[in-house]
Length: 206
Figure 1 (tube, rainbow, N blue to C red):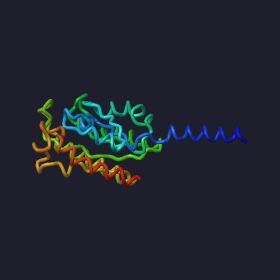
Figure 2 (figure 1 turned 120 degrees about the vertical axis):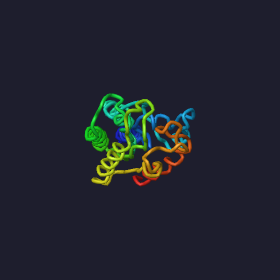
Figure 3 (figure 1 turned 30 degrees about the vertical axis):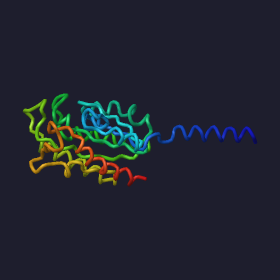
Figure 4 (figure 1 turned 45 degrees about the vertical axis):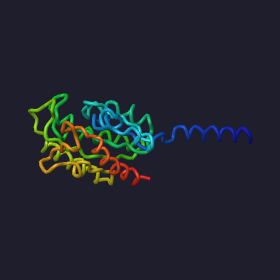
């Protein structure tokens, strides 16, 4: 009997160890990468006090995120993964890719998470009227199209969804100067608008 109790205790400890370590993992590009960097206007305390792990990687496209998804999300076993990506694909950081293939990568990340029992929250791409590193690209309509695709996919199975585009976008589809220093990346005020929107989506899953 004593040996049986020891085994049960060990199994309980093991379960506690492998149960969700984080409330959420953030998977994205520089929009997320800068979020915990005061140098770039971010708020590291947002992550620490809400038990969120930031796995944003500056400059990455969706194919690169998909390649590291197991290591950065699945292996960390969060309750939820928050995915916000696609603007670097539209900027052609790794060459041209149509929106349907960007969406395919997002769908693959989503299904990987769901197969592992991790709830998914999908975010719209932030507004941008131009990319300072690719000024020849006009991204407004591509971003709007991607956001419609993301919203449809999120709602088809009642997945989590956060519209970050609408409360941040100017009428011309740009990220206005009071929210960004370069028209692409959020400043501190912008992150302050984004944070309660994302936290609300996390609370729904509790």
